[in-house]
Image (cartoon, rainbow, N blue to C red):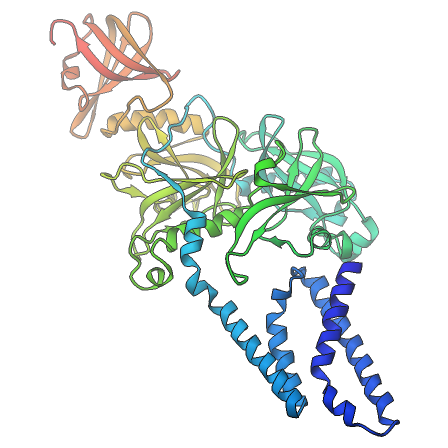
Length: 560
């Protein structure tokens, strides 16, 4: 508290000296007038001290002198009006100087667009990352997870004191889980309770799992008041740091909760943001530590906040050729999607357990739902990669995928949430959880980004994936080795054959004498339509672990 009081006192003294005409005071000859002038100075100083203190205390604004520029314009203008003679000239010069400074702050966004783009510039790649179909490819949607936690709120002691806080996904002890703190439901509940009892944890990959309430008292939270409010506590410890984004809850491997917040620098003139590190707060005792992005503790998954990633995506997409091009010409401009689950981005995990933020980009032209590419930003380092996909193909964006789901289930009024782009069997594909009007999970929907007519849905992500493989064969889509399934070769005698017409092609299913079933489309191998029982065949296929294995190459002995 001493730091903010001293800052407010200094600002109050300087402001009082600018407002009160000093030169006129020196001309005052009556001794009775001097105490009046001194009393006015003291009264003004007290008022200013309270105003400045209250503003910075309740707003949590950084206490840098640059934050005072609007206040300085008003004060120097008033000081010039109230004074006279040479003092008016001097204060008038101060006013003009502050006007120029204000113009600089207000117009900085016109001139720092190139620097913003360089900060957000991403490595670019063409290929869309493949996905191992043996793993669960999608998280439980956060709306569904939140609904389940609310229904389990009876586990919380003194339930009427609290409400469910913000939801975040993270990896805890090797498991992907949603975390949501229990928060105070108002000022008087905080006054009586002082500490929240803990947080909820729920699997982010298993929709049948139930929430668990973890007891772990927290005194410094977003719903606490005065100096126990977590954001104010952080500001008191770091009065000059520039923070961006909301505080987030992080759980270490022992289950202990911490709050974190990203900090960095303005790009220029209090405009723009470049992330540099994170502040970590022990939610129990308020102990704080700061870390650079290069030294983040292992248990922290989201050191770079979703809000930081979202604004950097905006810099990358809009400012490729400067500010004015983003308004008028819009050459090479690409707009980041707003369909993400957290600040317009969706957190996902790669095969190494590292968290990334996913965002797809679309054209600024109205009525166009074509995806131009997507970004993956490492949530711990802030480094991002932009994937364009095959430049010869046109991909549907996330909004287009959601519209297909809405039309598919228009009578039931179901809708999609959290669309993520994957490479399934060599096909760029949107995987999206489908929710009902009450926010409960109904199924998982997969649609080809390049061929929207190819789509399936299943009760689980893996169920949908198995159906999708068949749909790709029927629809002439690709089933190639870009999946992580191992490629193998088999020779044997055909035991049973089943052929199914699909458009202009035929999907051939056959059972070999090893009792394993395979499938291939006549689009890929036209000679497959002549297959019959007793034929000897040689096939190269993908070992996906499914009932019908996709065949890449196929040969019938005696025909080829």
